[in-house]
Image (cartoon, rainbow, N blue to C red; front, side, top):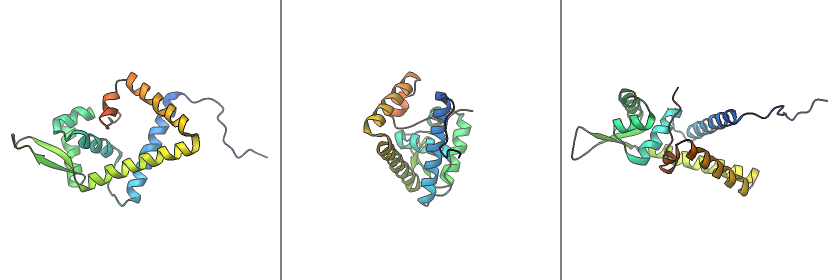
Length: 163
């Protein structure tokens, strides 16, 4: 009789595990948005929402944060403003410079994403135990720091993968 449990015949390399984890997180967050009635969400929007929440950037700064051209950042911001995730706020000192801020819909996305993240961590703790999850967090923090992304984590934002 065949065993119903899938068996790993080889140990997957770390890059595959991290890529699979990223995809699982992204899909879980998108499903959570849909269940919450938030329509039109795309994975890239999450990176923008986190960046905007962290510092209300200009388009130029958003381009830096996302590692894209100013034109690409402007097009993305326009799309997100049109879909109701962001708003523009003119600076009093220089009306030509506008900062991006979260709209109510963008704030709802951020709040829901944080709740979903907390739920994923609670589930891991229930399955693996508190000590294992804390060790996992420490390991991920060391990994991120060694690869130059700790500033983003401390600012509560992330950068999308550049393809």
